[in-house]
Each structure stands twice: as structure tokens, then as C-alpha cells.
Image (cartoon, rainbow, N blue to C red; front, top):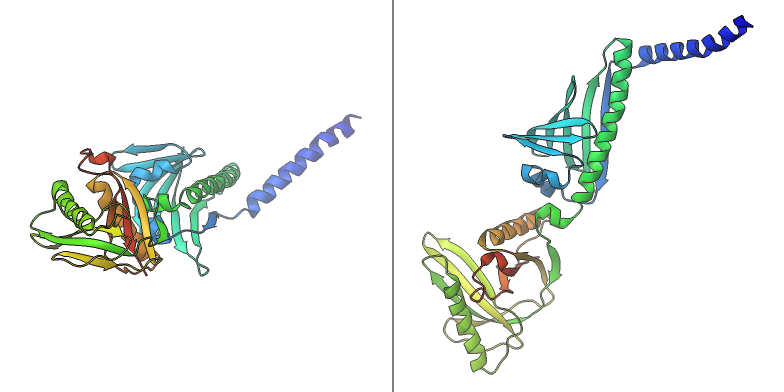
Length: 317
């Protein structure tokens, strides 16, 4: 009876020992830990956002710690220290206790047009049996962490707003006819100077017994060291006659145009314009006319520029 009982105990234990021995011998000296996910997005915009340490906390699925110039990100028990930015990805050092290996996040576009996000690392497995088994389970946990990170990242950057900081919409031109006034300043025109031009256009529209079809529009661009081309416009239902610097302009109603509404002053507007140029480059769009802003907020009445609401437009082909 004792012999049979001992056999019942030792047989399963022996099987476990054999299994562990086989696993230890069969396991390779290295493990490639790799995860990827495909999404509909824009790789260039994605990679520009990865350069900004200030936004990682918005999508990283764990704690984000900034220590001096270093960014340390925690996820699923691992620390990811951001080491280097590449044109299409980021290099990390992944640490957990005494374990430390490099890992690479890459963002590329495949042949079908999808953006492929991938995380890759190589884990060296020591020859010591126990440590080899520990390395195996660590690789499994790291793969799960990779999956968690990529899932969080893909959800966040599937949004146009998160890719470009603003919500850019491809829409169509709503108005056909505009009354415009152009002026050159030796300095960036002040709000008062902008609205003086707008006031002249409004007076001209009333003079010709017409009506305003929408909010005033503004375009300012530096054309020389001390020269700022400034054009204001107001949409009208029918074209009005030209008179001096006041001209009637026409846009293709129903033509393609990019639109983004933003709230804030000159810095916010400058960023919006740059992001819309980035969008055009990323999506292979060409400018069809000069960009302009529709002044939703009357800036004369609201001196606090943080409260300005502005629609930014880029006509495109």
C-alpha cells in the first residue's frame, strides 16, 4: 500500500520534472517579443505627435513621470524610459527590477494604406533553468504590456483632433460672392485697424442696399520685411460693383475647403494654421486660394483674446 501511494505521489512529480526539463532544454536562448496593430490613420501626423513629450499622458495606459529631460512611462509593472526619437518611431529602455532591455515603437504605413503600430524587443534567456523559466513568463507579461499600450495608443490617435490638436473638417464652400478690401500695413495690423477695414466694407454693402450673408473674414500674410498684406471680406448674396480698393470676389460654391473652429488668440490661431498645412501635406491636398479666418467673435467687443472664437479655412483641390 505504501509503495502504491508513493508511486501516486512521485509519478505526477516526475512528470512535472520531466516537463520542466524539456521546456528548459527546448526554450531558445532569445525570445522576440512583438505586438502590432493596424488602424486607419496618418503615419506622418502620428510621428509628429510622438515627438511631443507633453501629450504622452493623454494616451499612455499608466503613470507618466517627467524627470528633467527624461520621460518615464509605467505600464503593467514595467517602466519604459523614452531614449530616442526616430522619423518613424521611438526607442525605449524597458526596466523591471534587474531586468532591462531596449524596445522599439514604430509607426509605418503598409502597402494597403493602413498605419501599422508595433512594439518590438528581444529578451535574452539565461541558461540557468529557473531563470530561463522566469524569463519566459516575463516575456509573456511584456507581450501583454505591449498589447495594452498599442491598444490605448490606437484608440487615441484614431481621432483627427488628437492627430492635429484641432478638429479639422473637409467641407464645402458655402458662399459664392464676397465684397473685399485690401490694404498693406508696415506692421501686423491691430484689431482696431482690422475692424476699420471691416467697417468700410460694411458701409459699402449698406450703400449699395445689400446685406451681409455671414461674419467678416480676414487674411493677413507678411509679404516683406515691413509689409503685411491684409484682406477683409464679407459674403453677400449678389456681386457688388468695384470701387477703389473695394472689389467683388467670387469663390466656387460647393468647392472643397478645410475648416477648423478654434478658441484663443494669435498663438492658438498660428498653431491651427500650421496644423492645417500639415493636414494638407499628409493628405496630398493643394491650396485653391488664400486661407482666411471668419471672425465669429467681435474682437473689438471682446478684448480678451483667450475668448475669441474663430473659424479657420483653407480652400483646397
